[in-house]
Length: 170
Image (cartoon, rainbow, N blue to C red):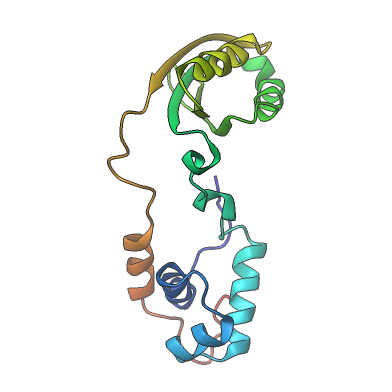
């Protein structure tokens, strides 16, 4: 989980503008936001460097790649082998993300599959990983709330910028 430098109001405004028009040039963003081109360029570079900007892969629909099914696999793992388990799970292409959890379940694994037979195969590969003790698979029927951050960006953009004379976090 990202715990790096926080996004300030100016950064949030830039990110909101990019959310509205992901293909906008730095110059177009600068004009729209009434910021200098250098400011926008530097802030985007810093956001990218600090990990505030996620991967472009997040925008790609797995269904367009032939993987229309999404499932969530919860797994219980031997705590002494979590690093090895994570390395093995990285080797399964249909696994798109894995979260370590607190509580009785250790891992939440998001999987995509071509069909139910493919999902069965992928679930078996997960269970075959040394260190995985038990799994439970749930098929996602429908996405009810898509991935979103716009409202949080709006909240951040509405915060008061750093006072003039003090250097804001670029």
